[in-house]
Image (cartoon, rainbow over all chains, first blue to last red; front, side):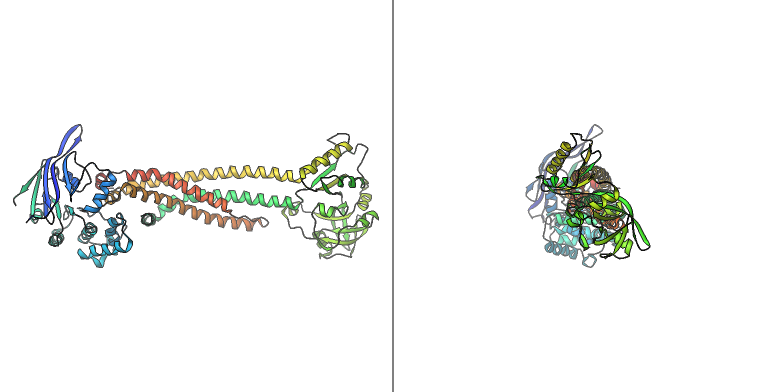
Length: 229
Length: 389
Protein backbone atom coordinates (compact mmCIF):
# COMPACT_ATOMS: atom_id res chain seq x y z
CA UNK A 1 0.00 0.00 0.00
CA UNK A 2 1.00 3.70 0.22
CA UNK A 3 2.15 3.60 -3.31
CA UNK A 4 0.37 6.72 -4.66
CA UNK A 5 2.16 9.97 -5.31
CA UNK A 6 2.85 12.02 -2.19
CA UNK A 7 0.20 14.62 -1.42
CA UNK A 8 1.84 16.00 1.70
CA UNK A 9 5.59 16.13 2.19
CA UNK A 10 6.91 17.89 5.28
CA UNK A 11 10.59 18.13 6.10
CA UNK A 12 11.92 19.78 9.23
CA UNK A 13 8.82 21.89 9.85
CA UNK A 14 9.29 24.17 12.85
CA UNK A 15 6.83 26.62 14.34
CA UNK A 16 7.71 28.73 17.36
CA UNK A 17 5.26 30.82 19.37
CA UNK A 18 6.24 33.22 22.05
CA UNK A 19 3.89 33.04 25.00
CA UNK A 20 4.53 35.60 27.74
CA UNK A 21 8.06 36.22 26.52
CA UNK A 22 8.82 32.50 26.56
CA UNK A 23 9.42 30.59 23.35
CA UNK A 24 7.22 27.57 22.79
CA UNK A 25 8.21 25.16 20.03
CA UNK A 26 4.82 23.95 18.90
CA UNK A 27 6.46 22.02 16.09
CA UNK A 28 10.08 21.04 16.26
CA UNK A 29 11.43 19.64 13.02
CA UNK A 30 8.41 17.61 12.05
CA UNK A 31 8.72 15.22 9.09
CA UNK A 32 5.64 13.73 7.48
CA UNK A 33 4.63 12.15 4.19
CA UNK A 34 1.05 11.35 3.22
CA UNK A 35 0.32 9.74 -0.13
CA UNK A 36 -2.66 9.93 -2.41
CA UNK A 37 -5.58 7.77 -1.30
CA UNK A 38 -4.29 7.22 2.23
CA UNK A 39 -6.43 7.40 5.38
CA UNK A 40 -4.12 8.75 8.07
CA UNK A 41 -4.91 9.68 11.64
CA UNK A 42 -2.80 12.11 13.62
CA UNK A 43 -3.10 11.51 17.32
CA UNK A 44 -1.79 13.45 20.24
CA UNK A 45 -2.91 14.93 23.55
CA UNK A 46 -3.82 18.60 23.80
CA UNK A 47 -0.81 20.88 23.79
CA UNK A 48 1.17 18.42 21.70
CA UNK A 49 1.28 20.69 18.67
CA UNK A 50 -1.62 18.90 17.03
CA UNK A 51 -3.57 22.08 16.23
CA UNK A 52 -0.46 23.81 14.93
CA UNK A 53 0.22 20.86 12.64
CA UNK A 54 -3.36 20.94 11.42
CA UNK A 55 -3.20 24.69 10.76
CA UNK A 56 -0.01 24.28 8.76
CA UNK A 57 -1.33 21.29 6.78
CA UNK A 58 -4.52 23.26 6.16
CA UNK A 59 -2.56 26.35 5.02
CA UNK A 60 -4.23 28.47 7.69
CA UNK A 61 -0.73 29.19 8.92
CA UNK A 62 2.79 28.91 7.53
CA UNK A 63 5.83 27.30 9.17
CA UNK A 64 8.77 29.33 10.44
CA UNK A 65 11.22 26.95 8.80
CA UNK A 66 11.22 23.67 6.93
CA UNK A 67 9.66 22.62 3.68
CA UNK A 68 6.03 21.76 3.08
CA UNK A 69 4.92 20.49 -0.33
CA UNK A 70 1.18 20.11 -0.80
CA UNK A 71 0.06 18.32 -3.96
CA UNK A 72 3.27 19.24 -5.74
CA UNK A 73 3.12 22.89 -4.67
CA UNK A 74 5.60 24.28 -2.20
CA UNK A 75 3.84 26.31 0.47
CA UNK A 76 6.12 29.16 1.43
CA UNK A 77 5.57 32.66 2.69
CA UNK A 78 2.51 33.27 0.58
CA UNK A 79 0.26 36.22 1.05
CA UNK A 80 -3.06 35.71 2.79
CA UNK A 81 -4.91 36.07 -0.50
CA UNK A 82 -2.81 33.30 -2.10
CA UNK A 83 -3.16 31.00 0.92
CA UNK A 84 -6.93 31.47 0.73
CA UNK A 85 -6.86 30.31 -2.88
CA UNK A 86 -4.77 27.24 -2.00
CA UNK A 87 -7.15 26.34 0.86
CA UNK A 88 -10.08 26.75 -1.46
CA UNK A 89 -8.70 24.37 -4.11
CA UNK A 90 -6.70 21.78 -2.18
CA UNK A 91 -8.11 21.47 1.32
CA UNK A 92 -11.47 20.25 2.49
CA UNK A 93 -11.90 21.21 6.14
CA UNK A 94 -14.13 19.24 8.50
CA UNK A 95 -14.43 20.70 11.99
CA UNK A 96 -15.44 19.31 15.36
CA UNK A 97 -18.31 21.78 15.68
CA UNK A 98 -19.32 21.53 12.01
CA UNK A 99 -18.92 25.31 11.41
CA UNK A 100 -21.87 25.66 9.07
CA UNK A 101 -23.37 29.06 8.39
CA UNK A 102 -26.68 28.96 10.23
CA UNK A 103 -28.50 31.43 7.95
CA UNK A 104 -28.01 29.32 4.86
CA UNK A 105 -29.57 26.10 3.63
CA UNK A 106 -27.52 22.90 3.45
CA UNK A 107 -27.09 23.32 -0.30
CA UNK A 108 -25.95 26.96 0.04
CA UNK A 109 -23.42 25.91 2.66
CA UNK A 110 -22.01 23.28 0.32
CA UNK A 111 -21.98 25.81 -2.52
CA UNK A 112 -19.97 28.35 -0.53
CA UNK A 113 -16.43 27.19 -1.43
CA UNK A 114 -17.54 26.96 -5.07
CA UNK A 115 -18.75 30.58 -4.95
CA UNK A 116 -15.23 31.62 -4.00
CA UNK A 117 -13.99 29.65 -7.03
CA UNK A 118 -16.26 31.86 -9.13
CA UNK A 119 -17.92 28.84 -10.64
CA UNK A 120 -20.92 29.37 -12.89
CA UNK A 121 -24.30 29.03 -11.18
CA UNK A 122 -25.50 25.84 -12.87
CA UNK A 123 -22.18 24.09 -12.51
CA UNK A 124 -22.02 25.15 -8.89
CA UNK A 125 -25.48 23.82 -8.07
CA UNK A 126 -24.76 20.53 -9.83
CA UNK A 127 -21.44 20.05 -8.07
CA UNK A 128 -22.91 20.91 -4.66
CA UNK A 129 -25.81 18.55 -5.23
CA UNK A 130 -23.38 15.78 -6.19
CA UNK A 131 -21.45 16.32 -2.96
CA UNK A 132 -24.69 16.12 -0.92
CA UNK A 133 -25.56 12.90 -2.76
CA UNK A 134 -22.24 11.41 -1.73
CA UNK A 135 -22.97 11.96 1.96
CA UNK A 136 -26.55 10.73 1.52
CA UNK A 137 -28.32 14.02 2.25
CA UNK A 138 -29.74 14.96 -1.15
CA UNK A 139 -33.24 15.06 0.34
CA UNK A 140 -32.22 17.61 2.98
CA UNK A 141 -30.65 20.20 0.67
CA UNK A 142 -33.06 23.03 1.48
CA UNK A 143 -32.94 22.54 5.26
CA UNK A 144 -31.12 25.00 7.47
CA UNK A 145 -28.49 23.62 9.88
CA UNK A 146 -30.84 24.20 12.84
CA UNK A 147 -33.34 21.82 11.25
CA UNK A 148 -30.78 19.02 11.00
CA UNK A 149 -29.40 16.61 13.58
CA UNK A 150 -25.75 16.77 14.64
CA UNK A 151 -24.86 13.84 12.41
CA UNK A 152 -26.65 15.39 9.46
CA UNK A 153 -24.90 18.71 10.08
CA UNK A 154 -21.54 16.97 10.04
CA UNK A 155 -22.52 15.26 6.78
CA UNK A 156 -23.31 18.66 5.27
CA UNK A 157 -19.89 19.87 6.46
CA UNK A 158 -18.27 16.83 4.82
CA UNK A 159 -20.20 17.55 1.61
CA UNK A 160 -18.90 21.12 1.73
CA UNK A 161 -15.35 19.77 2.07
CA UNK A 162 -15.91 17.36 -0.82
CA UNK A 163 -17.54 19.90 -3.14
CA UNK A 164 -14.33 21.38 -4.52
CA UNK A 165 -12.80 17.94 -5.05
CA UNK A 166 -9.79 18.83 -2.86
CA UNK A 167 -6.42 17.05 -2.62
CA UNK A 168 -7.05 16.11 1.01
CA UNK A 169 -9.90 16.03 3.48
CA UNK A 170 -8.63 17.48 6.74
CA UNK A 171 -10.88 16.45 9.62
CA UNK A 172 -10.34 17.86 13.12
CA UNK A 173 -12.06 15.67 15.73
CA UNK A 174 -15.03 15.13 13.41
CA UNK A 175 -16.84 12.88 15.89
CA UNK A 176 -15.98 14.95 18.99
CA UNK A 177 -19.41 16.60 19.25
CA UNK A 178 -21.44 13.51 18.34
CA UNK A 179 -22.77 10.59 20.36
CA UNK A 180 -20.99 7.29 19.74
CA UNK A 181 -23.64 5.86 17.43
CA UNK A 182 -23.66 8.92 15.18
CA UNK A 183 -19.88 9.08 15.46
CA UNK A 184 -19.69 5.53 14.11
CA UNK A 185 -21.91 6.52 11.19
CA UNK A 186 -19.61 9.41 10.37
CA UNK A 187 -16.57 7.13 10.61
CA UNK A 188 -18.33 4.70 8.26
CA UNK A 189 -18.77 7.57 5.83
CA UNK A 190 -15.05 8.32 6.05
CA UNK A 191 -14.26 4.69 5.24
CA UNK A 192 -16.59 4.84 2.30
CA UNK A 193 -14.92 8.01 1.01
CA UNK A 194 -11.55 6.39 1.51
CA UNK A 195 -12.59 3.38 -0.53
CA UNK A 196 -13.72 5.77 -3.24
CA UNK A 197 -10.16 7.12 -3.40
CA UNK A 198 -10.21 10.28 -1.27
CA UNK A 199 -7.17 11.16 0.81
CA UNK A 200 -8.17 11.68 4.44
CA UNK A 201 -6.20 13.18 7.33
CA UNK A 202 -8.02 12.78 10.62
CA UNK A 203 -6.81 14.60 13.72
CA UNK A 204 -7.98 13.26 17.07
CA UNK A 205 -7.04 12.52 20.63
CA UNK A 206 -9.27 9.44 20.70
CA UNK A 207 -7.25 6.21 20.29
CA UNK A 208 -10.32 4.20 19.29
CA UNK A 209 -11.10 6.57 16.43
CA UNK A 210 -7.46 6.83 15.43
CA UNK A 211 -7.11 3.05 15.23
CA UNK A 212 -9.68 2.90 12.46
CA UNK A 213 -7.30 4.69 10.10
CA UNK A 214 -4.94 2.89 7.80
CA UNK A 215 -1.94 4.61 9.34
CA UNK A 216 -1.48 6.32 12.67
CA UNK A 217 0.90 9.18 13.33
CA UNK A 218 1.58 10.32 16.87
CA UNK A 219 2.56 13.85 17.75
CA UNK A 220 4.22 14.60 21.04
CA UNK A 221 5.98 17.79 22.13
CA UNK A 222 6.13 19.03 18.57
CA UNK A 223 7.71 15.86 17.20
CA UNK A 224 6.00 13.49 14.81
CA UNK A 225 6.40 9.71 14.83
CA UNK A 226 4.75 6.76 13.11
CA UNK A 227 2.68 4.37 15.29
CA UNK A 228 2.99 0.74 14.21
CA UNK A 229 2.26 0.20 10.56
CA UNK B 1 -18.97 37.59 -7.41
CA UNK B 2 -20.64 40.96 -6.94
CA UNK B 3 -24.01 39.32 -7.50
CA UNK B 4 -23.13 36.76 -4.81
CA UNK B 5 -22.02 39.53 -2.45
CA UNK B 6 -25.32 41.32 -3.00
CA UNK B 7 -27.19 38.11 -2.25
CA UNK B 8 -25.13 37.54 0.90
CA UNK B 9 -25.67 41.14 1.99
CA UNK B 10 -29.41 40.78 1.44
CA UNK B 11 -29.44 37.61 3.56
CA UNK B 12 -27.49 39.34 6.32
CA UNK B 13 -29.78 42.40 6.27
CA UNK B 14 -32.99 40.39 6.28
CA UNK B 15 -31.77 38.01 8.97
CA UNK B 16 -32.06 40.83 11.50
CA UNK B 17 -34.80 43.03 10.14
CA UNK B 18 -35.43 45.25 13.14
CA UNK B 19 -31.78 46.08 13.58
CA UNK B 20 -31.34 46.74 9.87
CA UNK B 21 -34.37 49.00 9.86
CA UNK B 22 -33.18 50.96 12.89
CA UNK B 23 -29.80 51.38 11.22
CA UNK B 24 -31.52 52.58 8.07
CA UNK B 25 -33.66 54.99 10.07
CA UNK B 26 -30.74 57.40 10.42
CA UNK B 27 -30.33 57.47 6.66
CA UNK B 28 -34.10 57.61 6.09
CA UNK B 29 -34.44 60.67 8.32
CA UNK B 30 -31.41 62.30 6.75
CA UNK B 31 -32.69 61.75 3.21
CA UNK B 32 -36.20 62.91 4.10
CA UNK B 33 -34.80 66.04 5.73
CA UNK B 34 -32.59 66.77 2.74
CA UNK B 35 -35.15 66.10 0.03
CA UNK B 36 -38.18 67.62 1.74
CA UNK B 37 -36.45 70.80 2.90
CA UNK B 38 -34.77 71.47 -0.43
CA UNK B 39 -37.97 70.65 -2.36
CA UNK B 40 -40.10 72.87 -0.11
CA UNK B 41 -37.77 75.80 -0.58
CA UNK B 42 -37.58 75.15 -4.32
CA UNK B 43 -41.35 74.84 -4.59
CA UNK B 44 -41.95 78.06 -2.68
CA UNK B 45 -39.28 79.88 -4.67
CA UNK B 46 -40.77 78.64 -7.92
CA UNK B 47 -44.23 79.76 -6.89
CA UNK B 48 -43.11 83.21 -5.77
CA UNK B 49 -40.91 83.69 -8.82
CA UNK B 50 -43.72 82.80 -11.20
CA UNK B 51 -46.01 85.16 -9.27
CA UNK B 52 -43.58 87.99 -9.75
CA UNK B 53 -43.25 87.13 -13.43
CA UNK B 54 -47.04 87.06 -13.73
CA UNK B 55 -47.22 90.45 -12.03
CA UNK B 56 -45.10 91.85 -14.79
CA UNK B 57 -41.67 90.86 -13.73
CA UNK B 58 -40.06 93.35 -16.04
CA UNK B 59 -42.31 96.25 -15.01
CA UNK B 60 -40.82 99.43 -13.51
CA UNK B 61 -43.09 101.48 -11.27
CA UNK B 62 -42.66 105.08 -10.17
CA UNK B 63 -44.40 106.87 -7.31
CA UNK B 64 -44.11 110.62 -7.13
CA UNK B 65 -43.89 111.94 -3.58
CA UNK B 66 -43.15 115.58 -4.19
CA UNK B 67 -43.75 117.14 -7.59
CA UNK B 68 -41.49 120.18 -6.92
CA UNK B 69 -43.96 122.42 -8.71
CA UNK B 70 -43.69 120.57 -12.00
CA UNK B 71 -46.15 117.72 -11.73
CA UNK B 72 -46.39 115.00 -14.34
CA UNK B 73 -49.40 115.37 -16.57
CA UNK B 74 -51.03 112.71 -18.69
CA UNK B 75 -49.38 114.22 -21.79
CA UNK B 76 -45.93 113.79 -20.22
CA UNK B 77 -46.39 110.05 -20.33
CA UNK B 78 -45.97 110.12 -24.10
CA UNK B 79 -42.54 111.60 -23.51
CA UNK B 80 -41.65 108.78 -21.14
CA UNK B 81 -43.07 106.20 -23.55
CA UNK B 82 -40.87 107.60 -26.32
CA UNK B 83 -37.65 106.87 -24.36
CA UNK B 84 -35.66 104.25 -26.26
CA UNK B 85 -35.71 101.61 -23.51
CA UNK B 86 -39.37 102.10 -22.66
CA UNK B 87 -42.15 100.11 -24.30
CA UNK B 88 -45.31 101.56 -22.80
CA UNK B 89 -46.12 103.90 -19.94
CA UNK B 90 -49.42 104.09 -18.13
CA UNK B 91 -50.63 106.10 -15.14
CA UNK B 92 -52.08 104.24 -12.19
CA UNK B 93 -53.99 106.69 -10.10
CA UNK B 94 -55.92 104.98 -7.36
CA UNK B 95 -58.61 105.71 -4.82
CA UNK B 96 -60.66 103.65 -2.43
CA UNK B 97 -64.38 103.95 -2.80
CA UNK B 98 -67.59 101.96 -2.87
CA UNK B 99 -69.22 100.29 -5.84
CA UNK B 100 -72.94 99.60 -5.75
CA UNK B 101 -75.34 97.57 -7.82
CA UNK B 102 -78.88 97.34 -6.62
CA UNK B 103 -78.68 96.41 -2.97
CA UNK B 104 -75.20 94.95 -3.07
CA UNK B 105 -72.17 97.09 -2.46
CA UNK B 106 -68.44 96.44 -2.13
CA UNK B 107 -65.35 98.47 -1.27
CA UNK B 108 -63.18 98.73 -4.31
CA UNK B 109 -59.84 100.17 -5.31
CA UNK B 110 -60.58 102.25 -8.37
CA UNK B 111 -57.61 102.61 -10.69
CA UNK B 112 -57.50 105.50 -13.11
CA UNK B 113 -55.45 104.72 -16.17
CA UNK B 114 -55.09 104.53 -19.94
CA UNK B 115 -55.34 101.67 -22.48
CA UNK B 116 -51.54 101.14 -22.21
CA UNK B 117 -52.09 99.81 -18.68
CA UNK B 118 -53.48 96.59 -20.12
CA UNK B 119 -50.16 95.57 -21.66
CA UNK B 120 -47.89 97.07 -19.03
CA UNK B 121 -49.60 95.10 -16.24
CA UNK B 122 -50.13 92.01 -18.38
CA UNK B 123 -53.87 91.90 -17.74
CA UNK B 124 -56.24 89.46 -19.46
CA UNK B 125 -59.84 90.10 -20.47
CA UNK B 126 -62.64 87.62 -19.89
CA UNK B 127 -65.62 89.57 -21.25
CA UNK B 128 -66.07 92.82 -23.18
CA UNK B 129 -63.19 95.22 -23.81
CA UNK B 130 -60.61 97.21 -21.87
CA UNK B 131 -60.52 101.05 -21.72
CA UNK B 132 -60.01 102.86 -25.04
CA UNK B 133 -58.23 106.13 -25.84
CA UNK B 134 -61.57 107.70 -26.64
CA UNK B 135 -62.80 106.84 -23.11
CA UNK B 136 -59.84 108.74 -21.66
CA UNK B 137 -60.18 111.70 -24.00
CA UNK B 138 -63.96 112.03 -23.48
CA UNK B 139 -63.73 111.21 -19.77
CA UNK B 140 -66.45 108.60 -20.27
CA UNK B 141 -67.95 106.96 -17.26
CA UNK B 142 -67.07 103.41 -18.24
CA UNK B 143 -65.38 100.81 -16.08
CA UNK B 144 -63.66 97.44 -16.34
CA UNK B 145 -64.14 95.18 -13.32
CA UNK B 146 -61.89 92.52 -11.86
CA UNK B 147 -63.47 89.06 -11.98
CA UNK B 148 -64.08 88.83 -8.23
CA UNK B 149 -65.57 92.35 -8.14
CA UNK B 150 -68.11 91.44 -10.83
CA UNK B 151 -69.01 88.22 -9.03
CA UNK B 152 -69.41 90.00 -5.71
CA UNK B 153 -71.65 92.71 -7.15
CA UNK B 154 -73.71 90.80 -9.69
CA UNK B 155 -73.40 87.26 -8.49
CA UNK B 156 -72.11 86.43 -11.97
CA UNK B 157 -68.97 87.26 -13.90
CA UNK B 158 -70.47 88.45 -17.18
CA UNK B 159 -71.55 91.96 -16.16
CA UNK B 160 -70.85 93.71 -19.47
CA UNK B 161 -73.55 96.28 -20.24
CA UNK B 162 -74.69 96.68 -16.65
CA UNK B 163 -74.90 100.06 -14.97
CA UNK B 164 -73.29 100.45 -11.53
CA UNK B 165 -72.49 103.24 -9.14
CA UNK B 166 -68.92 103.89 -8.10
CA UNK B 167 -68.24 106.68 -5.64
CA UNK B 168 -71.77 107.95 -6.21
CA UNK B 169 -71.45 108.23 -10.01
CA UNK B 170 -72.97 105.99 -12.64
CA UNK B 171 -70.66 103.82 -14.70
CA UNK B 172 -71.24 101.47 -17.60
CA UNK B 173 -69.45 98.15 -17.25
CA UNK B 174 -67.60 97.56 -20.53
CA UNK B 175 -65.36 94.67 -19.58
CA UNK B 176 -64.49 92.03 -16.98
CA UNK B 177 -60.97 90.68 -16.45
CA UNK B 178 -60.07 87.02 -16.12
CA UNK B 179 -60.04 85.51 -12.68
CA UNK B 180 -56.72 86.06 -10.89
CA UNK B 181 -55.92 82.78 -9.15
CA UNK B 182 -52.34 83.72 -8.28
CA UNK B 183 -50.91 83.41 -4.81
CA UNK B 184 -50.18 87.12 -4.81
CA UNK B 185 -53.80 88.04 -5.49
CA UNK B 186 -55.08 85.72 -2.79
CA UNK B 187 -52.56 87.22 -0.37
CA UNK B 188 -53.46 90.82 -1.11
CA UNK B 189 -57.14 90.16 -1.66
CA UNK B 190 -59.51 93.06 -2.22
CA UNK B 191 -61.65 94.12 -5.16
CA UNK B 192 -60.56 96.33 -8.01
CA UNK B 193 -62.11 98.28 -10.83
CA UNK B 194 -60.53 100.30 -13.64
CA UNK B 195 -61.73 103.61 -15.04
CA UNK B 196 -60.30 106.22 -17.47
CA UNK B 197 -57.59 108.34 -15.81
CA UNK B 198 -59.48 111.53 -16.61
CA UNK B 199 -62.54 110.25 -14.71
CA UNK B 200 -60.69 108.86 -11.71
CA UNK B 201 -58.51 111.98 -11.32
CA UNK B 202 -61.57 114.17 -11.21
CA UNK B 203 -63.22 111.93 -8.59
CA UNK B 204 -60.05 111.75 -6.48
CA UNK B 205 -59.37 115.45 -6.97
CA UNK B 206 -55.84 114.64 -8.06
CA UNK B 207 -55.37 115.97 -11.60
CA UNK B 208 -51.71 114.91 -11.91
CA UNK B 209 -50.05 111.56 -12.38
CA UNK B 210 -48.60 110.48 -9.05
CA UNK B 211 -48.05 106.82 -9.87
CA UNK B 212 -47.15 105.17 -13.13
CA UNK B 213 -45.92 101.89 -14.47
CA UNK B 214 -43.58 101.41 -17.36
CA UNK B 215 -42.85 98.32 -19.44
CA UNK B 216 -39.39 97.88 -20.95
CA UNK B 217 -38.70 97.54 -24.63
CA UNK B 218 -35.60 95.45 -23.93
CA UNK B 219 -33.40 95.25 -20.89
CA UNK B 220 -35.26 96.19 -17.70
CA UNK B 221 -32.13 97.69 -16.14
CA UNK B 222 -31.79 100.11 -19.08
CA UNK B 223 -35.44 101.05 -18.70
CA UNK B 224 -34.91 101.67 -15.02
CA UNK B 225 -31.91 103.94 -15.57
CA UNK B 226 -33.57 105.93 -18.37
CA UNK B 227 -36.75 106.48 -16.37
CA UNK B 228 -34.65 107.39 -13.37
CA UNK B 229 -32.65 110.02 -15.25
CA UNK B 230 -35.87 111.41 -16.74
CA UNK B 231 -37.34 111.81 -13.26
CA UNK B 232 -34.15 113.28 -11.84
CA UNK B 233 -34.09 115.92 -14.60
CA UNK B 234 -37.74 116.66 -13.96
CA UNK B 235 -37.43 116.94 -10.20
CA UNK B 236 -34.19 118.95 -10.03
CA UNK B 237 -31.94 116.00 -9.22
CA UNK B 238 -33.83 115.25 -6.02
CA UNK B 239 -33.87 111.54 -5.72
CA UNK B 240 -36.17 111.65 -2.72
CA UNK B 241 -38.92 113.25 -4.80
CA UNK B 242 -39.93 109.92 -6.25
CA UNK B 243 -39.59 106.21 -5.60
CA UNK B 244 -38.70 103.83 -8.38
CA UNK B 245 -39.23 100.10 -8.15
CA UNK B 246 -38.01 97.38 -10.47
CA UNK B 247 -39.85 94.05 -10.11
CA UNK B 248 -36.96 92.01 -11.48
CA UNK B 249 -34.65 93.35 -8.78
CA UNK B 250 -37.18 92.07 -6.23
CA UNK B 251 -37.14 88.62 -7.78
CA UNK B 252 -33.34 88.68 -7.92
CA UNK B 253 -33.19 89.48 -4.22
CA UNK B 254 -35.76 86.78 -3.59
CA UNK B 255 -33.62 84.29 -5.51
CA UNK B 256 -30.56 85.11 -3.44
CA UNK B 257 -32.48 84.71 -0.20
CA UNK B 258 -34.04 81.38 -1.15
CA UNK B 259 -30.74 80.10 -2.56
CA UNK B 260 -29.05 80.79 0.75
CA UNK B 261 -31.99 79.27 2.59
CA UNK B 262 -31.90 76.01 0.63
CA UNK B 263 -28.12 75.78 1.09
CA UNK B 264 -28.53 76.30 4.82
CA UNK B 265 -31.36 73.78 5.21
CA UNK B 266 -29.60 71.32 2.90
CA UNK B 267 -26.49 71.66 5.05
CA UNK B 268 -28.43 70.86 8.21
CA UNK B 269 -29.99 67.85 6.47
CA UNK B 270 -26.56 66.71 5.33
CA UNK B 271 -25.41 66.70 8.94
CA UNK B 272 -28.25 64.37 9.88
CA UNK B 273 -27.22 62.09 7.00
CA UNK B 274 -23.71 62.09 8.40
CA UNK B 275 -25.08 61.04 11.78
CA UNK B 276 -26.95 58.26 9.98
CA UNK B 277 -23.65 57.16 8.47
CA UNK B 278 -22.07 56.93 11.91
CA UNK B 279 -25.02 54.72 12.91
CA UNK B 280 -24.21 52.41 10.01
CA UNK B 281 -20.56 52.22 11.02
CA UNK B 282 -21.53 51.48 14.60
CA UNK B 283 -23.83 48.60 13.67
CA UNK B 284 -21.41 47.26 11.07
CA UNK B 285 -18.67 47.11 13.70
CA UNK B 286 -20.99 45.17 16.02
CA UNK B 287 -21.96 42.93 13.13
CA UNK B 288 -18.33 42.22 12.22
CA UNK B 289 -17.58 41.20 15.81
CA UNK B 290 -20.70 39.06 16.03
CA UNK B 291 -19.85 37.34 12.79
CA UNK B 292 -16.19 36.70 13.59
CA UNK B 293 -16.83 32.98 13.45
CA UNK B 294 -18.55 33.29 10.08
CA UNK B 295 -15.59 35.26 8.77
CA UNK B 296 -13.28 32.50 10.07
CA UNK B 297 -15.32 29.78 8.34
CA UNK B 298 -15.43 31.71 5.08
CA UNK B 299 -11.69 32.28 5.22
CA UNK B 300 -10.99 28.60 6.01
CA UNK B 301 -12.91 27.42 2.97
CA UNK B 302 -11.16 29.86 0.71
CA UNK B 303 -12.54 33.39 0.93
CA UNK B 304 -9.76 35.91 0.36
CA UNK B 305 -9.43 39.29 2.01
CA UNK B 306 -10.98 40.98 -1.00
CA UNK B 307 -14.09 38.79 -0.94
CA UNK B 308 -14.71 39.45 2.76
CA UNK B 309 -14.06 43.17 2.30
CA UNK B 310 -16.47 43.27 -0.63
CA UNK B 311 -19.15 41.40 1.30
CA UNK B 312 -19.21 43.82 4.22
CA UNK B 313 -18.77 46.91 2.07
CA UNK B 314 -21.73 45.92 -0.08
CA UNK B 315 -23.74 45.25 3.03
CA UNK B 316 -23.07 48.78 4.33
CA UNK B 317 -23.77 50.26 0.92
CA UNK B 318 -27.00 48.31 0.67
CA UNK B 319 -28.23 49.41 4.10
CA UNK B 320 -27.61 53.03 3.20
CA UNK B 321 -29.12 52.76 -0.29
CA UNK B 322 -32.20 50.96 1.00
CA UNK B 323 -32.53 53.70 3.62
CA UNK B 324 -32.16 56.24 0.84
CA UNK B 325 -34.93 54.62 -1.24
CA UNK B 326 -37.28 54.44 1.73
CA UNK B 327 -36.40 58.06 2.51
CA UNK B 328 -37.19 59.12 -1.05
CA UNK B 329 -40.52 57.30 -0.95
CA UNK B 330 -41.40 58.94 2.35
CA UNK B 331 -40.32 62.35 1.02
CA UNK B 332 -42.58 61.87 -1.98
CA UNK B 333 -45.54 61.18 0.31
CA UNK B 334 -44.74 64.21 2.48
CA UNK B 335 -44.43 66.49 -0.55
CA UNK B 336 -47.73 65.22 -1.99
CA UNK B 337 -49.39 66.01 1.33
CA UNK B 338 -47.72 69.44 1.43
CA UNK B 339 -49.02 70.13 -2.07
CA UNK B 340 -52.55 69.29 -1.00
CA UNK B 341 -52.25 71.40 2.14
CA UNK B 342 -50.64 74.41 0.42
CA UNK B 343 -53.26 74.33 -2.38
CA UNK B 344 -51.66 76.91 -4.65
CA UNK B 345 -48.09 75.60 -4.58
CA UNK B 346 -47.01 72.32 -6.17
CA UNK B 347 -44.06 70.70 -4.42
CA UNK B 348 -42.16 68.09 -6.36
CA UNK B 349 -38.81 66.33 -6.07
CA UNK B 350 -36.40 67.47 -8.71
CA UNK B 351 -34.12 64.91 -10.36
CA UNK B 352 -31.20 66.93 -9.04
CA UNK B 353 -32.16 66.56 -5.40
CA UNK B 354 -32.89 62.82 -5.89
CA UNK B 355 -29.45 62.30 -7.42
CA UNK B 356 -27.92 64.36 -4.63
CA UNK B 357 -29.60 62.17 -2.02
CA UNK B 358 -28.60 58.91 -3.74
CA UNK B 359 -25.05 60.13 -4.26
CA UNK B 360 -24.72 61.33 -0.70
CA UNK B 361 -26.18 58.12 0.74
CA UNK B 362 -23.85 55.92 -1.34
CA UNK B 363 -20.85 57.97 -0.35
CA UNK B 364 -21.85 57.68 3.31
CA UNK B 365 -22.39 53.91 3.00
CA UNK B 366 -18.98 53.47 1.39
CA UNK B 367 -17.05 55.76 3.69
CA UNK B 368 -18.56 54.47 6.92
CA UNK B 369 -18.56 50.86 5.68
CA UNK B 370 -14.89 50.93 4.79
CA UNK B 371 -13.47 50.71 8.29
CA UNK B 372 -15.70 47.82 9.50
CA UNK B 373 -15.18 45.94 6.20
CA UNK B 374 -11.45 46.36 6.48
CA UNK B 375 -11.57 45.13 10.06
CA UNK B 376 -13.48 42.04 8.93
CA UNK B 377 -11.10 41.34 6.05
CA UNK B 378 -8.05 41.57 8.28
CA UNK B 379 -9.19 39.02 10.85
CA UNK B 380 -6.79 36.13 11.17
CA UNK B 381 -8.54 32.91 10.08
CA UNK B 382 -7.31 30.76 12.98
CA UNK B 383 -8.32 33.26 15.65
CA UNK B 384 -11.61 33.96 13.92
CA UNK B 385 -12.42 30.24 13.79
CA UNK B 386 -11.65 29.90 17.49
CA UNK B 387 -13.92 32.83 18.40
CA UNK B 388 -16.90 31.82 20.47
CA UNK B 389 -19.39 34.67 20.65
